[in-house]
Amino acid sequence: MLKKILNNKEVISWSLYDFANQPFTTLIVTFIFSAFFTESLAENNQVGTSLWSLGISITAIFVAITSPFLGAIADSGGYRKVFLMVSTYLCVLATIILYFFEPNQTYNFFSLELDVAIVALIVFIFANIGFEFGTVFCNSYLSELSNKKNMGKISGYAWGLGFVGGLISLAVSFIFLDLNKITHIRAINLFVAFWFLIFSIPTFLFLKDTKPNRAVHSYFKQSFNSIITSLKNVKEHKKIVRFLIARVFYNDALITIFAFGGIYAAGSLKFSFNEILILGVVLNISACFGSFLFGNIEDKIGVKKMLILTLWTLLISSVLAFLAPFLTNFDNLVTPKTLFWIAGVFIGLMQGPNQAGSRSLMARLTPEDKKNEFFGFYAFSGKATAFIGPLFFGLLTSAFGTQQAGLIIIIIFFIIGILIFKPLLNE
Image 1 (tube, rainbow, N blue to C red):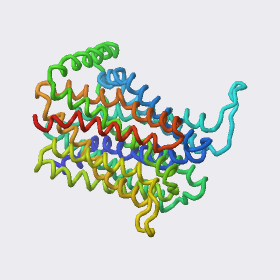
Image 2: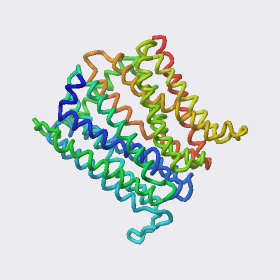
Image 3: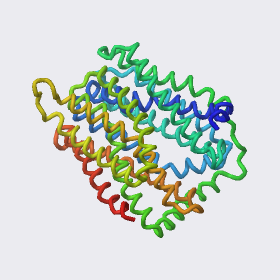
Image 4: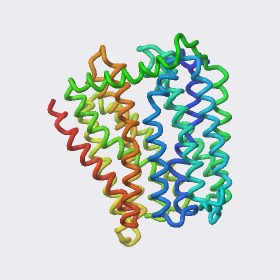
């Protein structure tokens, strides 16, 4: 099966898009630029954290509101590649512009003086929206490139290429850039932009579009009707409702960790940019190992027990990350940084199994004749609430003047998720 996938030029071209866009998530959103924004561009890391949370939240809300429209465009065929290219180039162009922002700059727009952090945040929002839109349009090709027998393998192959792309980009940055220098930190943006630009070319050249068989506006109506129908039908399945509500909370906690992991390491633990880069490498490796290991564990103990294990581990790791800055050195054997490293490794180990297990459990709970319908709602529900965790992280950081207050929302969300999910173990 893998040999057939590797011999399919269109599948390879489609999969390379994950390889192309992953460094944006890894280096811009999670680890390097986010920390540079809060530590260097913003007035201080509390203000920077609040602004960053606002940017992530605006993106999430905008994408959630527009997702039915995007789905309609994707379903209509014929237009996807154009929108995929436009989304990609928007992300690339905005990421290039991020290179030009330096600390202590101000900008005048129509007699209005704006701090560099505000302008950089606006540009980042455009880049992030372009990235999210591109992902939506790219994902919509999967059903045409695969069938029920090989969809998982093709999707997994693309995910694997994305992981490789993120890991290689981290390694290249670590080897060739000195992140003790601001110019090199800023150069990360150029590196990510040109990586995305170059490796997305095969996708645009070889991926084929189907011709639209009816007007786009009819697909808009179909998309909205599908969401309403799914919402009505899913209410009849109590286990799925309980699971989806639990997932809303623990998924938002994970989204918040991805958005603020590097920021918290820099602001609360005083990680250098080089240390943050190494953290990214370690978390990516542990995520890959965890996905492989827990795939086997799931088959032995069941997906529900495996998921609750990941949730408890993520909760304990988040508490450890929260406590780390409070703890003093014990003869230099246990330091706050050491404890955060331990927490980070376990979060990395559990993030892949948690996401894969959630998708697996949804498939097991959903009736065979409603899989497409319910999975559409599964995806929509994940997007619709993705802004809540980042928004509260920023609000709590601003209110209490410390990023540790923001981390409390992650802990609370994991606790709520566990409490709602736990009854499923007996059903």
